[in-house]
Amino acid sequence: MLGEKIGEIQCSTTNKALPTDGAMPIFETSAQGGGTLGGVQVQSLATYSSQMREDGTLYGECPAGVVMTADGVATFKATGIGRFTADGGATFRGAVYFQATAPSLASLNGICAVYDWEVDAEGTATWTLWEKK
Image (cartoon, rainbow, N blue to C red; front, side):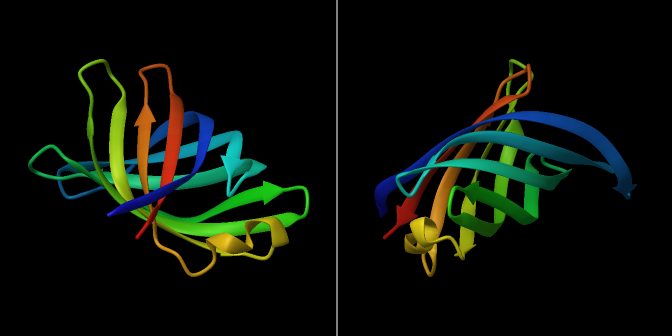
């Protein structure tokens, strides 16, 4: 069951192709932006990779992202499953886990958050997060 919405961050993204694993392409995406998380203003930086699977879906992993706020940082790891959209963007759904040292983000420690990651054809992304209950 989805719990309370815990944040929304708007990002700009850039992509590049990575060496393939067999015949299926791998993409690297870097995202940078800002919004709110845990009720505070944040800036976020992350780089993730996604590999196309034979059925056309994408499996993505973000091994290390960072969220910065006035009183410190939180790092995160995420995984997700996605697909390309008809308009040239991409959409992912997944889980993310935070480790916060910033007092204002301490409520993120020890929870499983789920997310929607929507990227339009111009590379503008919206990351919406909920606490999984």
